[in-house]
Image 1: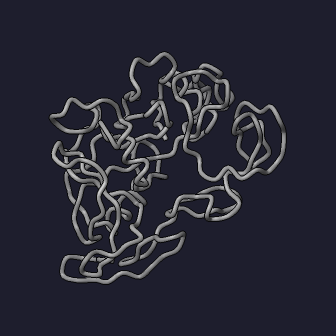
Image 2: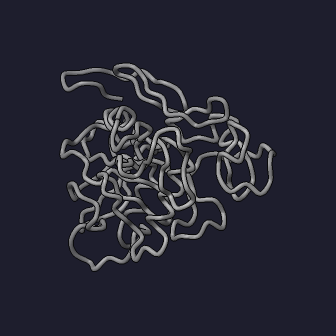
Image 3: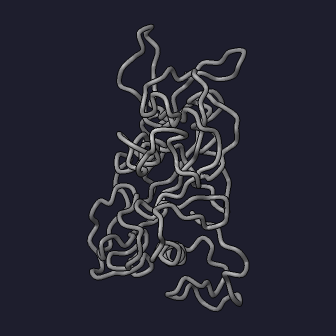
Length: 275
């Protein structure tokens, strides 16, 4: 999620967060404060993507927070999953490799939804730094390659043949990590429509909530109702597990990858791990 500068917070032990997004204590990890910060950034924003100034780019239509300028190093699919899972950046450690849907949302022109494309240049918004190349998604392909190898989905942001494509998992591509910022409460205003919290399995609870702290833990506020974020692993993305009704990122050991909420052994070779 978004990082907070010391100037955003006031005296210690003075409370959580004002409605205008100003922290009254050290509340950088407080979901209510982050909701308010997202609202202050996106309300009246002239563009879909905004720059909070902490090395991330926030998409106000989805409330997905993106790594703005990823390293130039190209990685295999397994190592891409590992890199995002272990990333500690902008004051947050719950980064993950984006799904195909998330990655395609940044693609300019059809079949993406990232905005209009003029037909030349990189097919990504100029606010997104890094290489103009192929990027891995976390989405596995259900089909094998012609030579019988497992594949995963990636997205090409280059002008020629840009769009989603399946590739050998041992290919090396760019890696841009993403975070699912909690969606704004219904009726909160601002440009950040939608959201990307996982699951959302109904759990009852207090009606008419406006923020997560209105709900008994571990329920969250979604569409003004208190619900569980998840009840089973299937309510979370494939690289997260449901723990006490909360989707949590988990990591595997050396030469393993995350698949369908579990760790799967990979092979090893002269260039590291492969799956």
